[in-house]
Length: 305
Image 1 (cartoon, rainbow, N blue to C red):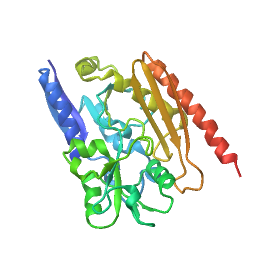
Image 2: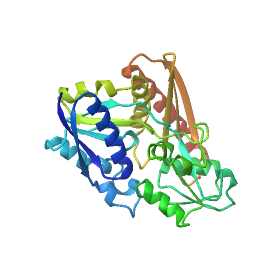
Image 3: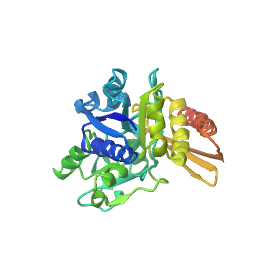
Image 4: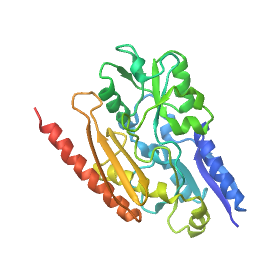
């Protein structure tokens, strides 16, 4: 049995996630404490992530704690984890995925289609912007930053007619009643890794990796490996309107990816593929293949007059 410290952001959702991992490790007999931290991504709220540095802003301070020994592991929402980790760090565990879909939250409109023409929808995700433009090009899409509670508060203050959030976060915090409807993946394709928790450690921490083995969920590990491979090849970050979502059943992994224009000037481009997958290497190969297909389709879309 070991003593571990978990580095975590201090938002209510991040603390829920860290406490969830803490509880599971304590059930194995380990002693676990939390190290709450505020990241640069939490501090900069007046600009979109694509303009200030992307997903890495939510993990850098946590990685510093891992590097200097203040913490032994860091719990992340996997969609916030950059596709390439710095040297000396590794993704040691991916836990079973919650609902990966996007949720529609609105006080007055049950669905996106119920919105009047020109209504205001809040999101700062370029992916969601592009997909919303494809579904409802008439809408006015306004930036929405902050943790989950802050975003809900801004909605309740009347700044938006509706907002789009990850269903997983709402459900984890017991806020499922705020969801008016959940977008099916056919209409709103999720971000790579959405709904999954990833645990990062310093390379060589075999003691931590061994303790986390019981938390690993192999089907989730396979699908997010394919999704993240799409993003890696595409150069995916907060500055790219990219979606990737995979499912795994009977040893067959099926993956869809989409690229769109947040301004709605170009049509949404989507590709899909499937293959028998037995390990993360084959899952990543499938993701890389889909990314190349998507790159070709995007180039064709750009070439059209």
